[in-house]
Image (tube, rainbow, N blue to C red; front, top):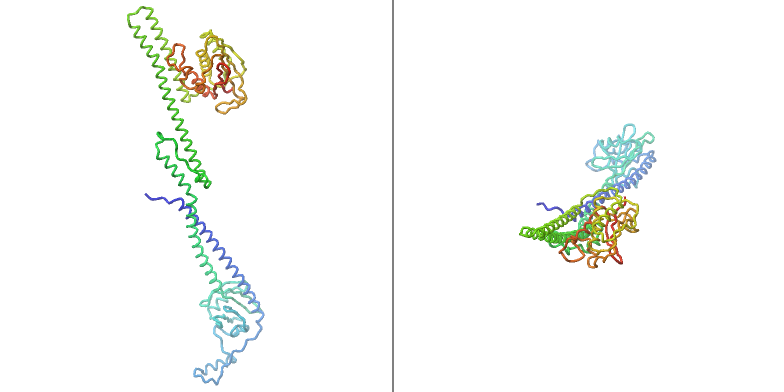
Length: 519
């Protein structure tokens, strides 16, 4: 398997590449600026040479050294003497004929001419030219003269290359019918530019390599907190979260206080760990509640099943008719009790599965009156009253609301003695109240069920809406006993409709507030 490059390596190489690119741009720019500056100076010098050449065109040629006819050298010949006589006593110059205003001996007719200076004069089809090279005058041959003759006479600087002599910056103009060209050698400019480029490229390579190594060290130091994050994640991955979800390793201060990006990753990992632990804790609580629910449900069903089995065996014996009738009635009663318990457990199971309830406008007052009437028939020894009744509607499920009322009144009937007054009220929710979904108080309605009975024992007030929680610890119930699921069903139904239920503080009796969304 090919090993992938590290982030530190990629970042350091990218940093070195960026530095190298910046240095390349800098070298190119500085080279262009330097060359432009040097060419500008050369063009200025060329302009002065052109002016001086134009001003001295009328100066007569300086005679060359005459040839001594009496020279004792064996190399002199009659042909050389005749050439001297034909040229008027002057030695012909190589590179072309002598023309008026042309080059005049060493230095072009005077001192102060710089090394590499070029001069060319053309008149009436005749041309001559020379260049100062190695502190002596070198006359131009025919190919060089032809190249210079092709230079435009516009007075602008041009660049020409003469074989064996180098590159020149020249300017040509016509003065008094004569084409005059002067030039300055450019080899020095090119040499300086090349030297500058070589030095800058060398320094750029050194700087780029140093930036790569320094950047790698810096990136590694900045990314060191990621190692802490990786170690924490690896520790979590190595654990069996089903058995050991507590005290997970969190990312320390070194990472959370590091660079922003690393701190964000570390914070996200710590938040994930918190969420995992919270989820595991909730799952553990849910599993514990499920086990308790199954145990309680089994116990609740076992009691009536034992009664049914016992009375069924009794009915099979040879007993009198009255005893047989009583046994059958008890079997029927225990069967009804089991059916009610199973129905309640099914209701809770459906609510736990997020069963969708209807959302419709409900007139609550008629439902309250029906529930009070039913409770009066079942327990005429209690006082069932309607308290404050606001003319408001509730948004929810009518069957669920009927079951809430039935369970609350049944709870008051079972757990209070005869003569207890039970009052049901319907009001707007007080200021500050809100549903589980955060709805404001103005859109909520409070259903209040209050009795003046003995109240709920303090030890179970915090668990009153849990499943199988009853006012006593006995699990043997008579026909009037409750299953301990009624208040859990009320809480689940209220939450499913977008509301909530709570046990209110009261000096006497029990007060339960059910808050539901208003229509």
